Image (cartoon, rainbow, N blue to C red; front, side, top):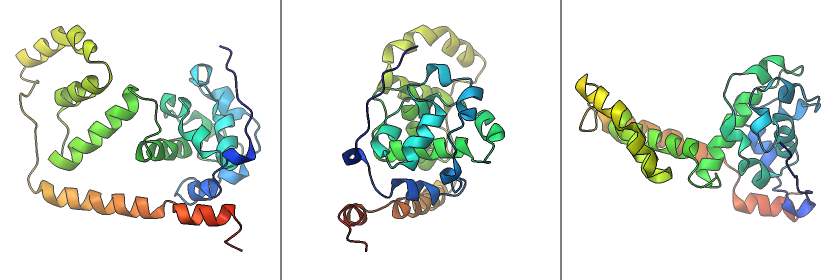
Length: 210
């Protein structure tokens, strides 16, 4: 599969992005990447990616935030950890890709109507409001926001689950779910506060931080 790559210019960089990623637990070794390509060679999904894991590491290290976050590659990662296991510099590449997914969702730059990020958001939303996930509702909400026609092709599966009593007709919940929601909100705020502020990025671009 031939993929055309655009030339990257200095104006496309987002100073501070690489540093922010390295500040996340598990991503500290990013700067040690020697671009050997081992991660791309062992990745079972690299053939289908618009950018290989090696290219993504280079983009993140060079602060090309938009190019990294808008890539389809981060959503095709199977999280098999082959890249992490084989990396000669012991870089936790899978964890870095996961962090890119998180930021792509937060900044809403993921591919529109792409199932994986929508599923992740619906999963989180249901967990936060109900305390647990009701699978059939999760699938329905995801299909409605991505490809609602797919639901018609799954009616036999739904009927079979219903006959076995495994197709609840209402959202399942836990007790004291408000406490769980408060804990998750606290974690969200910590994550958001850890992101570089627009003023800080602007100051770095204009040399205001010196």
